[in-house]
Image 1 (cartoon, one colour):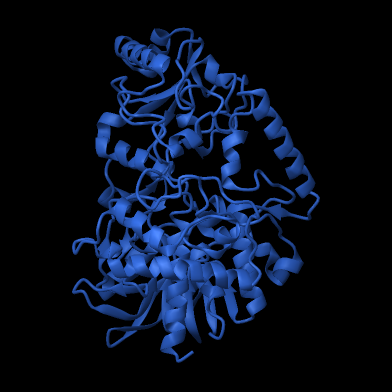
Image 2: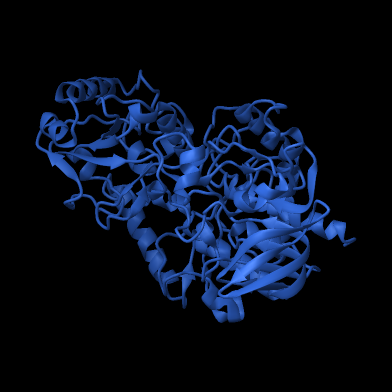
Length: 549
């Protein structure tokens, strides 16, 4: 076993781990990643961050503040409670103050954000302190992954050469309704033209890949960060209850690393079926998760059990409904698809059970609370839907053998194992409500977020349209996720807490390795990455302070 020393050992190279590394100037920092490339689940994500009161949004004309952010968090999650220490007043304050500070810090180091203000509303726009017209979500700019940006680390980023699906997450909103109107079609054509011009770069990346590449670039240029890939954390090293390093496995070699601080940014346990079965509501499957298939195996929980670390919210996930893509068969999201007119979601009894236009985290929470009564669930659409909107990568009017189709509601019900009588009754009631544009059962289209992800060309309600034009199609949807909301319990400095309430000195956690401060669900697009990166930034600065820097 060889031995090494560093000031800060960071386990995991997603957005949280790289944000901490970027903030660690002045420290000798070692980042270890079990995969061959860096980025983890962050690379697969929209790459956006929800940060109230930040300088980028302010420069874009957004009227926001830390005080409004606090008002909104308290309205969404309720007042801080003793039985929810992961969302204490101190942790909320730390997020609200350090978040804008981190954004300013990254900008001074050359991080580039999208120049356009985000139009994504907060997920609960009617609550106090919300930004109902958008602006709190930050999107990374499109960048070119080249040696100029990353030097010898260019190959560390997992991206296909000269590919750029969309510039930012909210672009999926128009791209998924290309034939809903002439205006929508022209908008998509203009977007495709702009993306074609961007492809003149050597290797342009956006969203999560841009976020990871830019953070990695800062780490490279700072010159104080080393990265070990294909390297796993086996165990923590302690001395009289203080974490002083870790044992790493790199191929056939074990490495004992002595460190002043260890930050666990390893993600959660979304890919560990045994842990899912132990902690999450049923049904649950790692096959429904959009998290990194090469990680998310519960490393943080495993290595922290011997040191008596406390946990919280282990039964919660960052939910996002998923389905098998009708073209490729691979897992994909269906949050925009569910919210569009001429579509409803039903359970095994043929009944609607949720508002299809709610924020995706809330929809999955509802699916999991219903247990087996809500699964399997089916997205039902008609030809009015199919000729206007996409289903995954299936374009309007295109066919797919993976779609289950029937010439009538009863024929479709028979094919998917539902009662024809119940499904016909559900759709009949839905169609009647569509005539008035009011969803009397679940309030679909009631607020700015609902309407934003609907079809603005559909009147009077952008989320409602009858299912009346055959053929009718169905595709199964799952209570998927982008990782866990629960994990190690940490304080306002991102230090891991023991089961007796004391601090484990030298040990920090951030991202999905830790229990989120967002106990009431996500406040907006980027509600996962914003806090993850902020608390990682806090952890790095706390280590620097402990060393007198």
